[in-house]
Amino acid sequence: MSTDALAATDRLFFERADAALDRHAAERLTARALADADDGELFLEYRESEQVTLDDGRIRSAGFDTSLGFGLRAVAGEATGYAHAGEISAPALTRAADSVAAIAAGYSGVAAAPPRATNARLYSDANPLRDAEFSSRTALLGEIDAYARARDPRVKQVSASLGGEWQAVQILRADGTRVADLRPLVRFNVSVIVEQNGRRESGSYGCGGRHGYGSITTPEVWRAAVDEALRQALLNLESRPAPAGEMEVVLGAGWPGILLHEAIGHGLEGDFNRKETSAFAGLLGQRIASPGVTVVDDGTIADRRGSLTVDDEGTPTSRTVLIEDGVLVGFMQDRLNARLMKMRATGNGRRQSYAHAPMPRMTNTVMLGGAHTPEEMIRSVKRGLYAVNFGGGQVDITSGKFVFSASEAYLIEDGRIGAPVKGATLIGNGPDALTKVTMIGNDMALDPGIGTCGKNGQGVPVGVGQPTLKLAGLTVGGTAT
Image 1 (cartoon, helix red, strand yellow):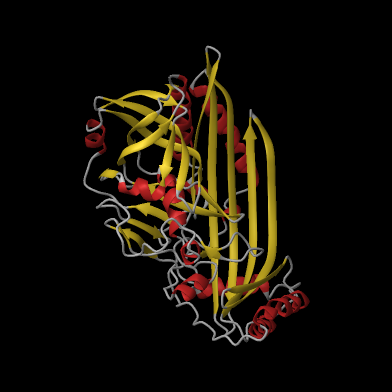
Image 2 (tube, rainbow, N blue to C red):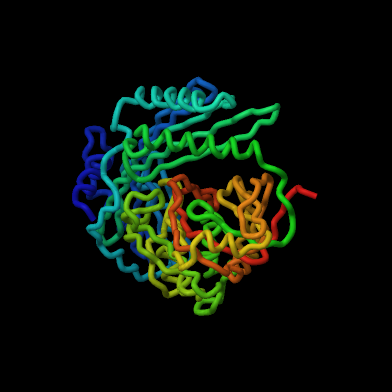
């Protein structure tokens, strides 16, 4: 780990003029709290975040926030003791240490080995909130509004937002091991509503990643985003009700990987499999997908929204193969579940903030490409659906059942893309859907950097990706008669 990150976080947590805790006291209290535990850590966090939103030509909200705090965790067997506070001080940490140590009372644990060290850096240390004056971002949103309205007289409403954060973390273990990370994150979203002959439709687009604002606020980037949102909105004006029934479905590349993330990814997280509540529990080493289907979770892609140099337990992230040529070969693991399952921690221990205990979470979950072109897939379909973009969805982890709504979809008729349709939903279950993949595209793409994943009340930034895929026999819900 970069010594610069350690030095920077030392200054934030221990060396400020008003610091109420010195490093040596933090190390002593952490060691005392975890003396009889199998694992655990002190997680220190400082975060700056901002968000500015424009709606209907006016700045509707603008905010800036800072937070500082710690979470202390002790793990004894399967049990976890966790305490946190919104201040970093010796009295607060002492109380936390007394609380979490109780989880190991009468227990004699063997401290797990610390995570391996890494000198990798996957993104800049720089704080994006210091890129330029906040006023420049509010001015840019005004430009975006004017540009969108000038593009087409049917534009009736424009919403746009810019958000950024800078998170500094330091993780201390009982043996004195320390790991630090400095994490930038930015995001831009735009939504356009158009009206024609009394009919209103909308379109949206967003982008972001672990870098400065400069990567998303250049005219080339934000104008392309507005153009894409407008294209979707105008397309929806021409859409007709989607048909219903079982049919072949072609999924577009990139963001449609959100279906893979939800319907399959969560079921491959270690905790659900250790507790045998996943639809994939007990299937390690078995074929669960069509030949050619390879799925990885990769937290090491530079500058991506879901990437981390180290996870929130201090473990370097990795490229973890989950499904290889259709066979289930691995799970995403934090330290606790990896230890109990006698597997390797994969760098997937993540938490929303210092107030939350870590658990296995995805980073960038991607299906790798195949040999077919998208055109080949379309030509092979007599009657079906081409789903290019998705909105919301719901998944049941235990059964794997999912329902996803397509925000952009087209009929496929006689091997050609036909009319756009509205109201299409895909209905199925993850394990079954994997076996219905019949063609895999050569156009694997990552999403533009907008994903946030929820689990057990915690939200974390993630990425998805996939090539164009053809699936046989999915159920499509629609409104056409």
